[in-house]
Image (cartoon, rainbow over all chains, first blue to last red; front, top):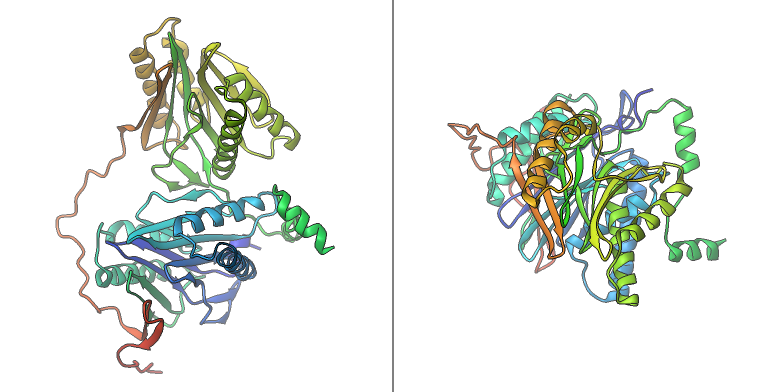
Length: 204
Length: 275
């Protein structure tokens, strides 16, 4: 038995660009060494300008996403306005820390655009928010993607370039991780639109 | 039991719903992922008229550097700062919680927060949790009783001393402090001593690294210098940068969601998957 975070596998990565933000994830859902499905969704659109990527134990991904959906829906109903990305980032940190002694086994990445400015935050499983870097990774292939990101990343990229760079970083990283891969999805969010690109990768 | 859930939800505090499930998983042999810890070197030095606190900026998750430039000096009150070592999530949330608690108290009582009051509140919170909240703090500040410096351990023990160091790099820093500390330092001497102590931690301890942050607290306020020294700046610039051609990564499908019009369209052609 390996770690709890390696049970299902999966990798996610987020990158900041110039007035845009990108998120990418692989598509594998496995049970240790078996692959159950190759179209599992790990990046969720919380709001028009907020994306939430989750990696870790898939049951907790599901539960945590449902919890965040509930929180943001309640917020919209109570306050009658949209939630700001920085507020959502703090909400995720608090929700994770609330379960400090019985944590969800997820490592989320929150990406959003606030007045055109990109917001990117990552957390460990108990809510330590880290939001000062230009790119963040999570999941079993995270450490390999770190290497690719450090090499490929440039500050202030436009959306098209950012889409390429994050796609290549994800694929390069996942190629070295047995528990991630089986495709990739790249989300690029700008003020005007959200583009979703399903990548063609090696089928192994 | 719905009313109980709602009551507990509104009361706030920790949620223990997942503890039983997690214990069962551990019993089955699964290992947890390490929390982000601040390996850390933090120091505090008392001088004539104030206190200086300094910290490194590395946060680790196991043996990976999770954050190369995190902030370990937290504001608890305008005249009381905390430098934190231990579990990063605990530090961040507890310090934010105490900041709010102290601010509320200042608004109610219309009095400046005192250092010994901060220490009492912290230790009262930490002791019942028997060290499970992993915060090791150095609290420094100046109030009506003059400048004070103390360290608080995760179990709720506190010690007042003119110089303190905590974290995995504390022994390296303590070597510098024990050798060079004197009573009656000036502000600049204290800052230089604190930076030197952190340097020792950065270079000799694997859990500490990157840059040095310093704050000097005097009657006139807190002078916070972020990244006053940088040891791990990227010195190498790639000669030929990686320039990916646009639309080069092959895609199976591409969708576009227009935010203003709120409509989803498919872009481009579908690619055939060759079996």
